[in-house]
Image (cartoon, rainbow, N blue to C red; front, side):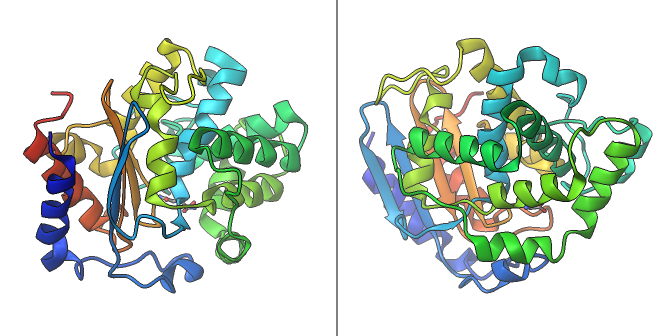
Length: 307
Ligand code: GLN
């Protein structure tokens, strides 16, 4: 397959869409990002990468980090984690409070905010505090992306902490139901730092290849998850990776994938490749408008989808 040519075609075809959608402005630091940018990278099993656009530019991975933290947590807690967070699509926005009340403080899945905050709470309990838990997530991210200099952006994290009411409310609600172990502010602050990790599409695409190959990175030969664990994370990405637009994403793109409000999306083609795409303007569901379109074009042109 001529991936270079296909990526170039996609880059050309998305140009007319680059000004559609809005950057996330509920986190003021994200609103400052130049909005009309685009990058896409694929990584194959032998480590070969193909990119178009600004594939070296660092951006805020936001909710994509939920996949990284959940990978660590599932390896640490195994199935006992599912007592605290479910595995059903929510059909609701990523920061919705309503369902959490009805369902007694147990978030539907680890990829909505409440679920990811519980995962951070669990990591802090296990590793002995905010600093240790964040270090584990950071080191895991550096290892899977084979990039030791990855950091979180403290300006983005601080900016989100200054507008944290909804995430604090989700956490307080979970605490009221007994599904919280640590200090609410400390957990939310650490969760924001995790969301503020900065990576490029080259980093992210490289990082996700363990999920395309059953938990084992085919480039480094390191096994990060068991086959069963990787299978479950891919199932969750397919059903919950785009919140209340997950069905539409599966319908149009047909790959397990996870989005973030920084405009990034990662996707895996099982046993073939991992993909990262970035364009900051979002659709109404908080997913990258052009990122979604680029992935849809990719699976249409290549015929690579899981269906
Ligand atoms: N940090 C963001 C939040 O908690 C992540 C949301 C997202 O990327 N969908 O609101």
